[in-house]
Image (cartoon, rainbow, N blue to C red):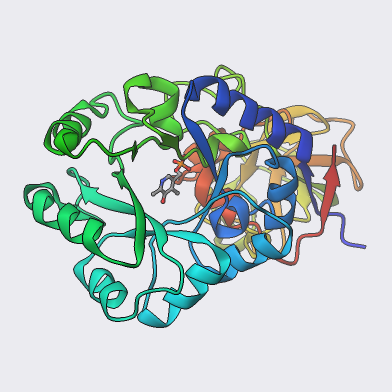
Length: 355
Ligand SMILES: *Cc1c(COP(=O)(O)O)cnc(C)c1O
């Protein structure tokens, strides 16, 4: 069998939820499990996060699966409904849709659900992605509260720079000031906000990435935040080459040896979810020792430097990210973020679940 495997730890995920809860104070916690729980599997997330106050997903299908698995907590639909045909299912499954554009209000008005819904009314406080403009809040809130299909309203916004030095106050202040008069519960915090800005907690927090043991910050590691990596992508060496000075390895011979050296070939490539944009120098653990990738990543293989790994040969274990090698370090070297690497884990990679 091809030796690649992702080990996913339920215990680490449960631990990370406890960290999120400890930072959330009295706020309730939606465990964000969109994108197959950031690549970790919806069913595993449901078990690891059984004590969450709610779950946040993107699609009706994810929400329906959670209900089938026995989830009884509130389920937030992060982008709400994509058409009027989804209203009935929201009522049947008791889901909380986000409302962020006017057509969604029209749909609810024209086809009120059999049972009124708890909705999250999203305002754009500066990210300019989803949400109603703050300026028109009085009319929007009044309209939503008057809809017979709406049982309760929680106000919501999302931060564009919670992970950066500039922070959240330029968005949070107008959001809270403009909407204060409505005296409604609110939700704003993603992982970065709840970790750094307690003033963002509100009624509900919405941690995602931290639950999987990665850091939302470039300047603070997951370990420093007390988080444990949930996914370890590991494989083995399936070949060893010796390069003479001037010889290259991999497509394009992008890496060339300056002196005689051994190169290991690892059973992991971009079809497994390893980033093809990772160039020479991306960190990799060979037999527990830090090394680096060499040259281009292939579909099914990549090359690593064995200069400092004299004992390594076919069968030597290699960690691509996870235990001992933060996914954030690999992401930084590949010019992306941990989110993309984790949720890009390919379906062909077998998963071993561990405690
Ligand atoms: C994905 C998402 C989150 C979670 O963000 P993290 O950075 O992963 O913590 C929170 N809120 C909304 C609206 C999201 O789409």
